[in-house]
Every structure is written in structure tokens, then in C-alpha cells.
Amino acid sequence: MTITILQAVLLGLFCGIAKCCVPYTAGAFMFNTVIFNAVVVGAVLGDMPQAMIIGASLQLIYLGVISAGGNQPSDPCLAAYIAIPVAMASGLNTTAAVALAVPVGLLGAQITNLIYLMAGFFAQKGDKFVSEGNAAGMTRWSVIYCAIARIICFGVPVAVALYFGSGALQGVLDNIPAAVTNGLSAMGACLPAVGFAIIANLISKPKYIPFFFAGFFLIQYTKIGTIPLLMVGGFLTFLYITFKANDFQGERDEDDEDDDDEEEEAVEKLLSKKDILKSWLIWWFSAETCHSFERMQAPSFCTSLVPALKKFYPGEENKPRYIEALKRNMTFFNTEAHWGGGPILGLTLALEEKKSRNYEAIPGEVIMNLKTGLMGPLAGIGDTISWSTLMYLLIGLFLPLAKKGNPADRTVDGYLLWNRIFPDTEMLHLRLFFC
Image (cartoon, rainbow, N blue to C red; front, side):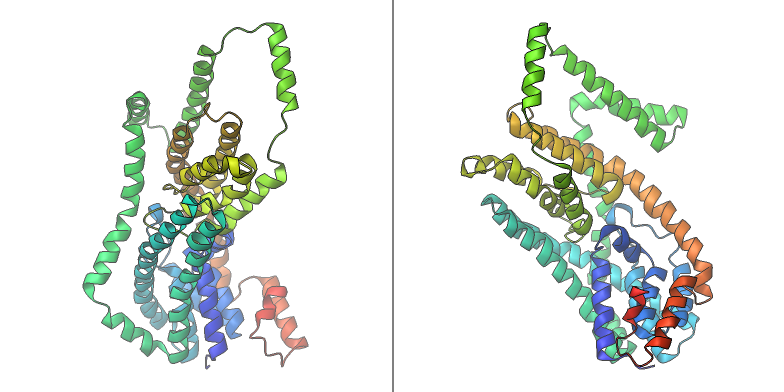
């Protein structure tokens, strides 16, 4: 089999998109696995069974690989887009494909760390536009341009390596200085420590220290799990906020309560369900495109809030507060986009709306502390459930099919049907996606 230049470019493009995790749910599966990328490789190269057989063998060496805190020790995605096509084109057996995938996966981890470092530059460019109140410029630089750069950084090497052969790729691997790879590996290993440092900085405030020791001794002596502890913590937090709010609430006359109720009913909500859904979709599509060592997912989180913030602070007279809100949400933020991003996004929208109605009632520090306090625990739950449990259950479900060269019975049946109807179509078998 010979890989054409168009096939090489398409595989490079799909690899770059997969490394952007767009959209997050499907993109994260592509980012963290081999066999789901093998479906794409087989579709482009026109040999689905062989791609799935090789992909199943490669997937076995990445079982249990978890990106804790954003640090990925090896890159199954890049390994899939290099090792599977090269093995198919050169006739390598699965053992040789595995041998090729290991160094490619390590190289992918270094490229990812390099991109995380480079993405900090785009975040800083976004800060310049934030200070001017130009959210479009911020989004353009810190999210869109960053995503394009990521696609190029992965897509070009993949396309070149596939078109010119594995020898070109091996030459790149042999000529990377050890000091560079070691430095990037060390930088990636620091990611979990950064998250712990942020949480520790929040906990170190005197008013939160009793909660820290209470949680520590509760885990130490009761052996309670993380999820039950989080539920207990959420319940206690609710009680704490409720009773603390009651201390500041004076007694009201019935007339005053009626007046307040009428006033509350008269105030319309600034955001509709459609606005909230729009913010969520922006976050869902762009959560990982701007990931950097400096800000992590902050630019995407801020971008998802922009439509709401424009409603909260309309007009030129509110521009200083609008800029302050943008700056507040461009600070460091990192969580699991489903379990952490959704709840935190909703809470932030609610607090920002409340603050816009009574600007002095809610300090900006409260919103930032809420995000910082929740992003770690919720990320732990999301990573555990979604990417350490459910993902591997799905892999276990599809792996036996993949070993037989069958991504899914209905998919292959549709694929064969298209081949019978359009035997001479030069669409590189992309019609598979429409089956």
C-alpha cells in the first residue's frame, strides 16, 4: 500500500483535531486512546479490518495510561496516526508496529509539553485584548490561533512522516537532544504539583484550615472514599453558607417581605436557557484547545462566559466592570470539562449575574475562590469516572471486535455496502462516516 499525499494530509489534519479535543467528549476519547483513532485511519486508508487489528495490539500497551493533572506520559493518539498507517503501508506485523509506536508515543508527549509551553504566549496575547475589553481579540488569539498552532504542530509532522516514510520520522527521533526531551518531561511532570499548590494556597487561609483538618482526620480514621467525602463536604458547605447567611439577615415585617417578593418578581433574569446552553457549548468545544502551563483552560473558560458577560455589563459605562470580569476569569483554571467544567460554569454564571445586579454584594475574590476550590475535587471525580473507568470499559467492550478487524458490525456493513455501490469513488473512503 502506498500512502498518497492527500491521505497523509488528511491523517495529519485528523490527528491535529484529535489533539485539540474538539469537541471535548469525542475529542478526549481520540486524545487518550488508539482504537478510536484506528477507525479514522482505516477509513482514510480504505482498509478498516487491518487498521483495527493493528490498533487493538497498540491499545494494549496504553491500557491504564492516565493523564493525571494534564500530564501525559506517552501519546497514544500520535502513536495511532503514525504506527498504524506505516505498518499498513510497509506490511509490518503487529510486533513491529508496537516497537514503532513506543518511541512515537514518547515523542508525542514531548510535543504536547512543548505546545503547552507555547500556548502561554497566546494566553499573554489574549491578556492584552482583555485589558482593552476586546473579548473577540482575546478569543481569537488565546483560543482559535492556539488551536490552529496545535493542529499545525501535530498535523505537519504526521503528514510529512507518512508521506516520506518512517525513515524521516526515525531521523527526527534520533536527532532530538536528550536535554530537550528531559526538560520537557520534567516540565510535564510539574503539572499535578501546580494544581496541588493552588489548592494548598486556598486551604492555607486561616478560615479554611479547620475544614482541612476535619477532612484529613475523617479520611484517616474512617477510611471513607473520595466521592462520599465530597458529598458530605458539599452538604456541610450548604449548611455553613445557609446558617452564616441567616446571621446577617435581620427580621423583616410581612409588608417588607411582600415588597421584596414583588421587586424580585419584577426583576427579569438576564440569561435565558438558550444563553446558558450557548456558554456550555462554547466550553464543550474549546475546553482543551488553549491548554497551557501558564493558564491551563482559563482562556476557553473566559470565552464561554463572554456572551453572558456582555449581557451583564452592557454599554460603554459598564466597560470597566466588564474588563474586570474578563480579567477575573482569565486566571488559572484547570478541571475535567464534564464533571468539573459544567457545574463550575453554571455557578460562575449565577455569581456573575448576581454581582452585576449588586456589584459590591459579591467580591470578585469569592468567584475566583469558588472556581479554585471546586476545580480540583471535581476534576478528581471526572478523571476517575470518565477517563479511568468508563473509557476503559468502552475499550474493553470494543477491543475484542477490534482484534477481529471489526470496529462495529453495523459500521463495517455500511462500509462494504458503500464499496459495492461506489467502487470507483476517489473519496479516500471518507464516505464511511455517512453510513
